Length: 455
Image (cartoon, rainbow, N blue to C red; front, side, top):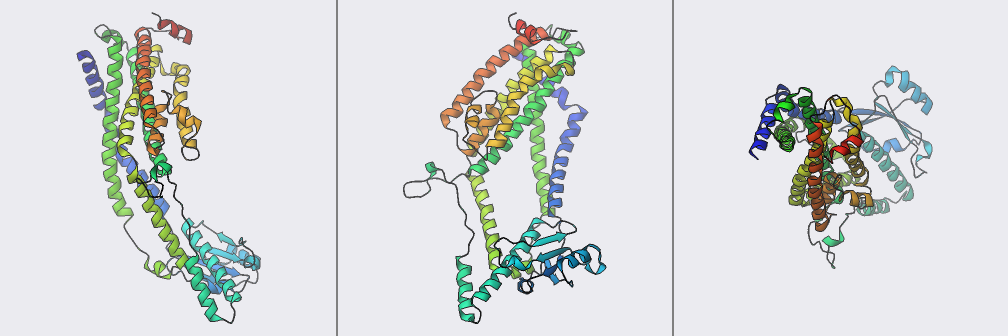
């Protein structure tokens, strides 16, 4: 154990002192936070005010459009027809003041599905597009109500009030039968399986990335020492198994160190940047002019956001973190042992391709199944069986744990199978490593590697 500890220390100190490690450890959080801030800024970039030219073939809806002084200014265009308005919007200098051209055809009132058009020079944001559509819908409803009760303002007022009260945006919650009693009362806080799936996928991606990135570093390190003949000196005083495990654990500690530093500094930088690029603000004009229906939509959006946060708090974080640590370590150790065995069997990185494919296929399969099934079909047979299979469970089981769909016995079974697989994998990898690390100038085949296992 003392020799293995020395190898671990050597691997760790050698790698953390490298200039590339120091540079990437410093630049990593800056690049990540900068990328995050750039995405937020680009998604927020929007014109302060849109002037929308309206060609109204109904001759009435444009007069009923609710005023939107905050972002949108309506302006009827001077044109004889839609084609005339379109030509002028393309080439007439007097139409350059319009950011968008809104066409309201004559049949828009009589048809349920609007055939209107929004023509733009530069695509507007989704929020602006939604506001325009909502304004047209309100204008259409206002006209239909006024025609229905023409001449009877009292009834029209009563209907408007009733309509505003009964019109709502329905929302439904998915509730697990185990979280509700016979009276319909919640036994515990309901966990939204979609939120759980998203959190589980994030942790699974970390495991997936860590295994590939740092497992490949183990393999490159073995190839480098073998090529430089350093291994011949080291192997004279250390057992091959001790050397292999020391290298695997040493690289793992390097990766964990870098991940912790990245996580801490990225969080600090993102919070600082968010304070500058997303200050709290309220558009007074827009709020004051907002229709009751649009305020209802915003209220539902706020409720949706609160539901997301509540669902995040309701997740079984103790189970998720515990499972993450276990599956993270076991998955890395299993695959790193295989990567080390591959590195010992070849003389250069080019020759690793024929052996890498069967090793990475299970991980790729697990990642794709999670990506396509977690939201659409979380209880599929593929999710169930791959969460138990040792070579895929580090990625898949974590998603099921976060969603709350995995029974305790299933998690324990997956853990037990992983431990057994780890022991078997390390035994096989050590056999290959012991023979392959001193083999030079020959490309081994699968048949020859199987022979090494019998030595």
